[in-house]
Length: 341
Image (cartoon, rainbow, N blue to C red; front, side, top):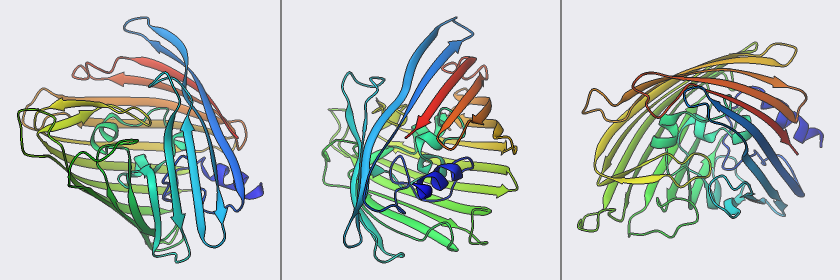
């Protein structure tokens, strides 16, 4: 129990550790039941729309089996995406050799610092628009090899995945190849410099097309932590031929749009953790939805504050401001209460 409390406490600041699922279960033995709920209130200042809802409500099990095998399973119970619960993550990992560990099943794609951050440890209530649109499929079925940890000078993940998203059969002969590497010159979470790559093909979304659709991604990231100060930044470039996906988030499938596009985006986040568990957050995001045009870019600013009542409970308040180009982002207030168990 003490180890679990320490892990959750470390969630007060962003971690560079790899997280295939909603929690980092690499240090615990035996069978563990875990979960978290996130009741939330939304208010849109442009439309006066407001509602109470559950952002996420998740329940899972993880543990270890002699020798060197671990298992992980979690389901989404909140009806925010579908009317029924659905499988989110489920994988088996082999962990005897630190530099050559493996996992098979359904898990997060090893791409992007923000995507690897568990949903209950996000600095803001929602992920950035550009990560949601460009890093996907956010979850997929496949096989991954990974190595290193927060105390090594670097760590890596390399995966072969279906490329069709969670709970889906592959729809063509090709696979997605995804990888992420993080360099930590001080062998700690003081500074992390990383990069990600993805390439894959899928069945053509347009019925009249006979050639597979393609997607290609490059990403770069920076994470700095020092005496309560945290600075994060990422850049992602994406090229889609045939079709592309927009939206989705942690559990949603997203919307497939027919067409070809080059897109890019970046964000910068700054935080400071006070000794009395209060953490103000500022995030600035730029997202260009079509590099070939001059009118599909948007700037989004998130002003937030996180308050940690204890190691398991926190309150997040976010105010979202969108630029004139961000027609799909209205000025909104989000208040979320979270309990992890």
